[in-house]
Length: 112
Image (cartoon, rainbow, N blue to C red; front, side):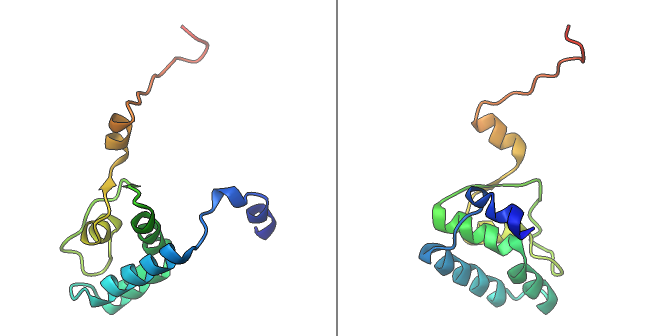
């Protein structure tokens, strides 16, 4: 795996000072949220979800996900909920395609 990652470094975002600051902000937000269980807080801050939100926060990016907000969830911090609370835009793939004016065309195998 290490060799595969090293040969594809361009696919991975670097941790610069802005991202580190955003990770701290995301982690602080998660730990201070009273609705989540201790296990949910640990899980969110230890996995890629918090890093994704931090990168979007530091770079002014929009997160694209099928996940829906879970404002009443106690057992799991959902990406759209964290993003909304931190001022990060989070949209679904269909809205992304609309914004980018993308369309999908299905062509039968073997042509028309």
